[in-house]
Length: 201
Length: 179
Image (cartoon, rainbow over all chains, first blue to last red; front, side, top):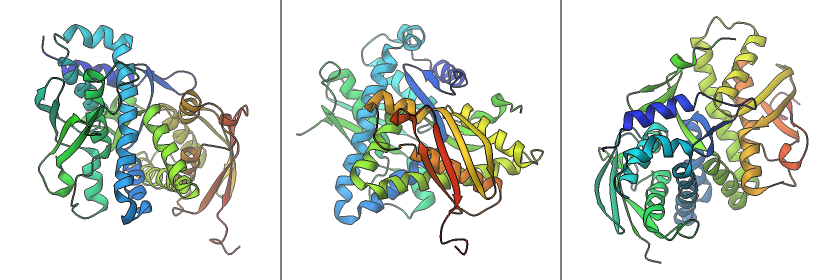
């Protein structure tokens, strides 16, 4: 059975409208918030500026690492949730199908518009494209054309997907993989592309 | 106040928007990871960055939203609208009972960031609602038609420190108003 992205999107849109009496949205085993993408872009790109050129590489690693640890924990919670069990699990035929399920959730979260898997070599490599990453859009809005990819959150999440599927059992598998972004709209490409492979260290 | 949430929170193509302003859904893991990273790496500068980011993004967004909802005219209605948005966005509950254009006090009995921080890291020794402080500053500046940076919001009590509620003090920023 193919992954029904629309069904997952609809469930998340409906679920995100339910909050408890404390104004908290508990969904897919996590507490969800809805907030303007401009906030996340200001935080990321001003953090990079705040770290200065000398610490730029460290800053990028921190942003990616924060997202990877989050993606690992969040999507672990998501796939253990009753919503995943009832809605997504019946659509999954192979382990690899989970990637499609994860991307459907990421699309529904508003992270990047249409997302498509280009290729997946189980246990080794994942390559997928994102057509409207909010990070690249935000970078272009606030800065000039970039020299390198700027979608740090999605880079971390790409690696986290592979960590969850092919790393050691939770919670020991995080950072087994790392991801690169060879194409990014922030540097003038027509889409953002992520490649997650086993970390070299 | 009635907000047609079905109409205002929607997908435009594959993007998610609130009042046509792009939003993203993020969970407490990511929000709190960013929070901790900023504090750990940049210290006070990181705290300020988080505050300023929330202030700027909220100020811009509420200007647009209030422009669209022009039938919300009184300051009281605008504050109710802001509290409603806070709750609908899953950010928590906020009570604007004692605030005006020259400042005041605001109470939040629950929030996404408090719940998220406590779930991931437990109690703190210092107030931790930097996001909410910036959020409050931005929304009040939009409501009273003031520029960004007009207010300074300080957190007097914080549930991350085991206080019963988060309590915020809003004042005019020193040095910007002839003081």
